[in-house]
Every structure is written in C-alpha cells, then in structure tokens.
Length: 323
Image (tube, rainbow, N blue to C red; front, side, top):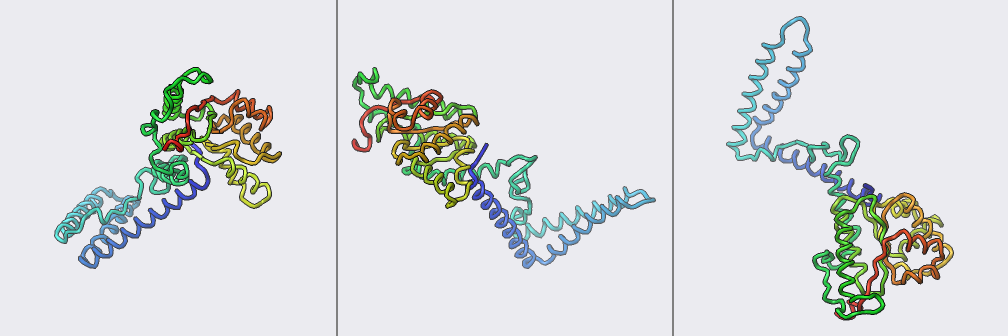
C-alpha cells in the first residue's frame, strides 16, 4: 500500500512524538513515585541487580548454578511483593509506572518484520483523512447520506431512463467499487454537468478506500497540472508529482476546467499512461461528455479514458442550485 510521502512523513512525526510523550510521562510518574516513597528507588535498583546476578551465575564455570539462581529468584519475588505493597499503600496506580513500548507489536518503531505496523498504518489513515479534507467539506460525504430524491424521476430520452434510476445504479456501483477496492480495481470516469454529485461520490469512495488502508491522493485538475509545471521548472520537489503517480488510488477532479496547452496534454498523457501501465486505479471526474474528450485532449488520451476506464454518466439538475 502506497501512502503519499507527505502523509507518511506526518504519520512518522506523530509516532515519534507519541513515543517521546509516553517516555516523558513514564519518567515523570516514576520520579514522583520515588519522591513519595524513596524505598521504591532502592527496590528497583535491587531488582536490576538481581537480574544481572542471574546472568552472571549462568555464565560462571565450574559450579552448578541452579541453587544460586533459586536464591536470586526468591529474593526477586520478595522485592516485587514489597514493591507492590508500597504502590498499594501509597495509592500509586501500577500502570502509571509502565515503561512498555507504545506498541507491543513493533516496540514503537512503526515497522515489524520489514513491513509497516498497524500502529503506523492507523496514523497514516488519520493523516490521509486530514490531507483529503478538501474532499470532505461538510463531513457528511458518505454513501448513506447520498440522496436520490434530488434527481428527477421523469424519463429522459437521452439516457433511456430517469436520472434517479441512473443515479441509483451509479450509487450501487460506487458502493461495491469501494467495498471491493484493491490494487487491481478498474479506473473510473465520472462524466456529467456541474452539481450532479461527481465529487460527492468520489469523496465517498475515498473515505472507504482510506479506511481499508490504501493510499489515496486527491487533486483538482488545475492543482495537478500546476504541480507538474512547478516540478518541470524546478519550483517544486519531484516528490510532488511522484505521489500522483504512486498512489494506490488517484482522484483527479474537474478535468476540463484547466487551461489546455501542449504541456497540459503531455502531462495528462504521461499520468494516465503511466498509471495504466502500472495497473494503478484512477478516478477522473469531468464536466465533458465522452464524445467531447477527443476534441479537447486528442485521440491518444481520449481512447485511454473511454476505452480503459469504467464510465459512469451523471444526469439530472444541479443539486446546489436546487438547495
């Protein structure tokens, strides 16, 4: 799973900070306990000594260490019982003196067995939701809040059904797409006029795919092409566009609203083609009809978008105008 470099950087910083806070809290609690009951410091020192004693005995030669080990264990248990008695008497919560790592699975490093640990995955998911905030302006962008009532229930000859029926099919498709999303999922092309729910359903998919632990990157067409241009002219780091190319799911919004130029066409072709070759799903929304794509972007790009992407057509009346 491929999170953007920015998401991963922020998640790692949070993990480091959480580790520091836990260690600082443990040391503060321990110092307060030692101040309140100085005997605790002595017991902890003796416990460390008994542990070292067992190691020393085990490495000694020429004698049976079993008797010495039993004596050390007995002393260790007596110290632990006294320590527990002091904690209970002073009403010091035992878990406040817990120096175990932040995550028992990875020791707080964020990685185990060469793979990202779930603790770091969760921080990445949280940071990704933050980065994707422009997709969630109301916080209500979920499939169960998508209202079909705003779509006309009258027959449209151009689509051979009612917009409500059409959008019911689109909603069902998007729900299944998000639920079944994987690295081999198809790319999607949302086509329809402004205000028909393209960005809303994109956000619903992004939210669910993020929760599954996949890396999602969102950008408007204007932002994406501006980033490509800034990298080309050394005004930005190359990682800016690398994230677009490496994301598990790239969501490109409002294609067709940007100023078209030879550079934009080249950047779009590179992005679409590279992600197709890398078998990485892309979701593109556009106000353009499929038949208008070739006139604007040329045959090479249009054939890839129409031929290789699953097309969802949006019909109806501008939801924002209705509201």
